[in-house]
Length: 402
Image (cartoon, rainbow, N blue to C red; front, side, top):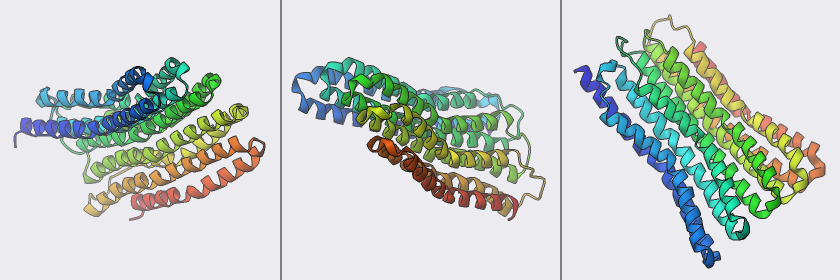
């Protein structure tokens, strides 16, 4: 088959994946915004116009991630990449995966911020303008993972792969798409939950706007860490992906992308719900504002452990020594190692977030029991790490024993 046709086929598949996945998150986020706008109007009919304006602004921001996906899909459809080498086909598929999946979490996350802003304005009409500002700040941070995905997509589309054999570098390029695409979901979604909680808290306690905004931004920043890990692995796969090798190398590159991509979902969402509960707790009990920051950060830090395991497996797969015979079972073992750690990190990351979130709520109800609540939270999170450790052990066995 002619190389030009192979590249074009990859572009078409990438465009379909990009827009197909990319349309989901923004539409859900816009639906959340529209639904709560109607509910808010039913509560205050006289404010139908300002609520509608806020709804449209919020939906416009939520639409951003889908617009990114549309732009990448159009580039894949109409840009001639045939001169970039045979690997351009895999790069196009990777770009579609990165941007399509990468738009998912940011679109939904932006919806959480705008729905709470509109509902909050229905409870506190006098601060509607300030509420919109808080909403936009929260939504802006939610778009960060989608921007990471856009950057990776551009690097994949416009890279020059002339003279490079199709494999194993094509596997590294597709792995980069998996890494950044899946890796952006949890951080975008979780950041939106934190932004929504800040708007809800502002409606309950307008005087705490500054404290809530600070808590939101710090919580959202930590929730972006898994997406940053995914960005790092995606960049490494593109820039340092092997240009020669066997079936073992190809499967290792795919496994590396899958490990960090899936592994980032749970920790990103878990960090987001921890920040969400911290904002809610402060709005109910302002005296815990200062200790809540420390409490939230400790809970989020422990919640990063599963994605750090995933990052470690990804790095080991990228820099492993694959001089042995390229057997099919051996190749599948390397791919399975990434799958084991990727899926195995989702539950512990999210479960740790649930534990930390409820601990933040408990601190808001019992401020004088900080030590007891902290100990209980850390013990529970330590136990919740056990399943991530099981996945890590199996990944090690698959890489070094079987």
